[in-house]
Image (tube, rainbow, N blue to C red):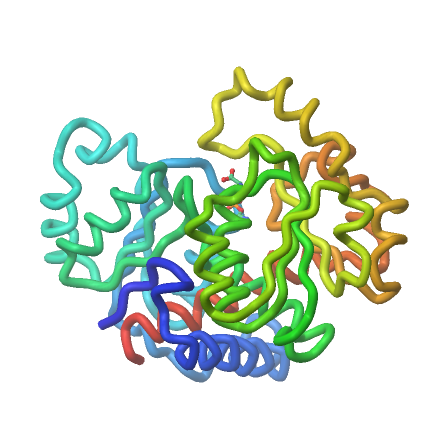
Length: 308
Ligand code: CP
Ligand code: NVA
């Protein structure tokens, strides 16, 4: 049994196998008529609990569909509707759920909820986003980059805007998959030193460049995310927008990157804020492939967790 808590805690060989498995399962579906069930049903007879303490479209639907494609069943639970949201401890919740279900995916606020769940559960626990990281997203992003451009090792990835949870998982992935990473945003929103330190200690280059136009030069991939995350105070919205406006990804900024540079965004996006529609809907954007690949990548993550 394996937990999938964060990319830096997962063996690089296992991560690579998951990306390959995801591609294989995606191709197997493409090779069969639409609507035909997967030949492989590795989750037959298994029940997966999907717990959401924050809103979700992609994570919720892609996990639900992924489990069903593999023959399993799901139970989607809102944290608020559970006793978890009303004082029952995380440890007790984990022990109780382990008596009913075969795996738990949780999207929560504080990372300690995820780690405590994993400490006390007898079944695999998957991180479906916390305030600090979003590893499933980045597995889909690595898969997407490699589908379009081949191996990501040695490439230059540029993150623009807030050094948030998705940025943190990208830094973990830079270390594990061996690509160079540039962060371009205001100093107040730098990624935590721990994330930068992990990537650097793995031997990849991490650059902080305040000027977005300088940062994207030579980029193979430009990435943006919302300027106000679900865990950020709404009262900080105007201040963040003012700080982050110079980091909007628009056609002028993309023109400074390599001509074949891809654009990614985990979605949901705020059009004309962190990115223009011209870039989102332009020829270098792979945002909907990323969204699709959540499904395939997470199927591989779940199989690895259960060893099936
Ligand atoms: N990218 C992502 O995790 O989307 P949702 O918030 O819709 O799940
Ligand atoms: N950084 C965003 C990602 C959403 C998928 C958030 O945490 O709200």
